[in-house]
Length: 239
Image 1 (tube, rainbow, N blue to C red):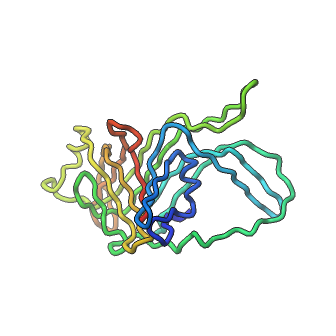
Image 2: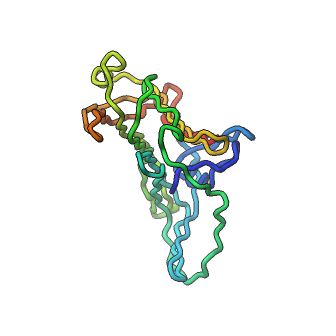
Image 3: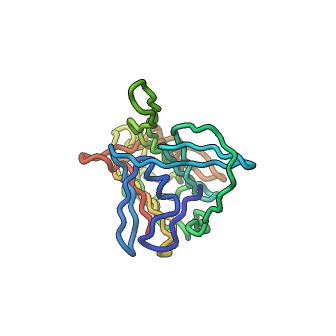
């Protein structure tokens, strides 16, 4: 789905339940912001109904994982994958969904996406992808209950940005020395329409030159490392 805020600062986005079912905890600061940080236990779950021509397919107790993408010329998006308990399809009348919580998304560009910082360096970014990479298993054992479980996560991603002089930042040495640094992306400028992405301990891996429209680029993989307190590899803030 489209990466977008709620239109009101301090109000959670319409897809909040999906984020929480992917292992995020929600913290609301009234009239200011809503933050999502990963947790290691007590994961929420959701029920997912899919309707097709009068037939409903349903998953209950669903949990999953999520990735996000910000690409030049495309609407920023979130991609979810869920596991849950299967139910026999039934003939069911279509519900009347409410879409008012979903706002018109904005595309990434120099105006709408003013802040891209990697290792304290402002970069001109063409694309970014981040994957929470939850490890999902489904347990259905005799004497127990069937459930979808999140057992681990290994968040990672990739980025493409314009190359510069070594005096500004030597990304090849940064990768060789396995240095950790912060990633921050702020997409949106008006209150209620701002999506902020923070990863405080990012390792740049395998940087390589590439070309885009005749411009030299750096393409690199990213590993999102937890801090000493844990559960802080990736934070999503809507404000």
